[in-house]
Image (cartoon, rainbow, N blue to C red; front, side, top):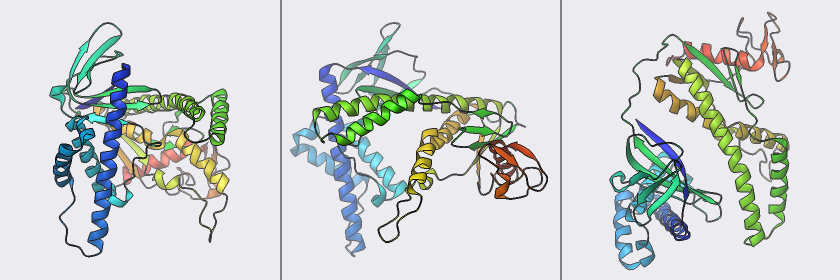
Length: 386
């Protein structure tokens, strides 16, 4: 089983400059290869008979370009080839025209060393370790826990002012054939007031940002809007904002991992609503011909959905399920919050408030999110996958 171990790096100035350079080269390779693929699609639509522009063709062109372009030879060959592989997978999964460019001001530098046998990891003491990477040499990192198993790859990424290394290791474990409690199941309802409510009546939630941090974020974003692009003060503001939002993201990821571990350890089946969060958080502005309505309310809802991390929670469940053998089932979410779990009567008036559900037919009363979670669980048992 593949497991990731993430550590914070302590790079020297020369190593930090090299990492920035490697990231810029990978970004240039990504954008150039994506431009080639888009041009190939455009010519194919116009009727030109061209060879398929895939990974193997672009890898050969990259090897030929490195002979003439010196700046391409500064970065390790493996990370450039891995960039082309990542682009090929993104184009296959989403389509060439939907893959985004890596803009310099929007993209966070990252690159991957895919050859595990060329990566050496050593422990230096109680708090520090080091890893040997091609063309970077030995890089020191905070030893928060020991990596288990054989290193398969290493990914370096920058968040704010710090660089991190993620070691992907093969630990030799396998997903259990059966859960320790095979007859247990739970339904989960994701919400904006409560992050996760279960059919057992449990409410999982956490404040990822305190009021003072929220006020500071608002001030920083207002200051950022007034500052000139490319200025030194704007860079300082972006760095401060990145540190602030980074703590929020870390708390959200920690909450999702802990909650997912509890649910998967106690239940053999976890039933979720099949939510397309990408469509749910789209703006309601509309167009000039047909402007949207209640745009500010929709924007507030979008921020609330993103703030609770619905999609990240689902990914955390899938990751935790590998350790326990739990099955993750997704069901149709239609009318789960308006349906009475006792008499199955559907009425939007039964949802008296955000937290109160009282059936207009039988009078059944429950927490609204818990009632929705119970409906989700029932649909999971009756679905073809259940």
